[in-house]
Image 1 (cartoon, rainbow, N blue to C red):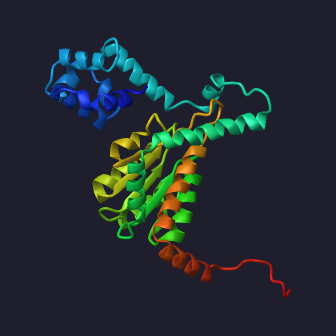
Image 2 (tube, one colour):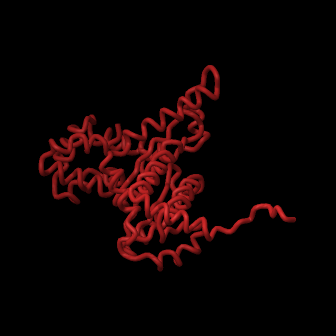
Image 3 (cartoon, helix red, strand yellow):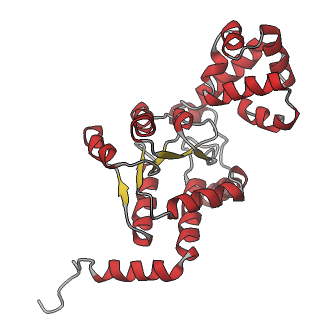
Length: 283
């Protein structure tokens, strides 16, 4: 269990001092916990013994054990396919059937990663036509961002997919207005450029960042108001995006169905101006 999950599990049983520590740790997770114990105590106006008692309450043998756990989480977030293959579980029996069973398990786990309340909040945010929606993903995850943006723009207006070239991003940043939404998809082997974009968007343009990431949490989570932590581990050399895709499709269907008359009208208008590049039967 991650440190973040341990803190959230005990949130109702924390003292005022422990709440100060938990807030500081979660605001700059996991880096706040990697500071020396004296620095963490000073930053929270507590004491080193209070910090030690807090991490013991979380189930660790001491502050060093607590920090080793955080370092392990960081390493998990940077594992490459080569490293994943070395610790993968062999597939036995019929390969395709066994592989798809693992994919189904990832999709099933996605239902545990996001509460119904959070799902509804994010659906409402993406459906709010007073907001412009900007979408971008990482090197491997951008197809998920494209899937979201291409479907969402058929449901509502003012949906923009940012290109991969950072030299073009200032144009989009300048378009952003307060309360607009930057939806970022960033899975492990996280991209520093996306984190810098999210920071600039929140600090300079006052937009709301919605992050889709994995259980180890992209650094962008420090700038996000909503975090969708989708399961990706299929015990193979490749991370699986099947759970993340299912979550996106659930959001899109929820938004489209919520005001079907408007969605239907938008799709019909969209199709009426779509350019037809089909074969000319009169040739």
